[in-house]
Image (cartoon, rainbow, N blue to C red; front, side, top):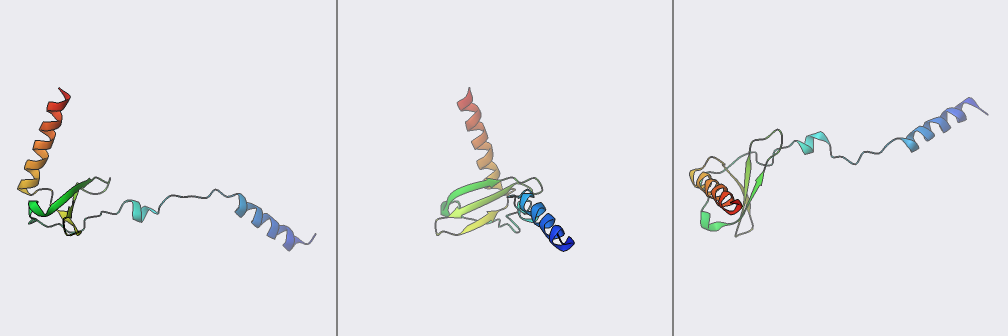
Length: 96
């Protein structure tokens, strides 16, 4: 057999049996969703709150509004801090 054919078959064999990774690239996994936050969101316009915590980002709060938009809310706003404290107290009471 010709040396070029043997090398080609070896390369094909290695590429066929190499493990395939289905993981996302690091740049997508470690990306923060909220790049900017808003401080003024009417509580009455919020339909749903999502809390995200990724390893390299601070706590991120995403508010889905009744008009369908999603905005990132600053987690240090006073009404959100009060909401979180009340939710934690409510969870503590239900466990007891």
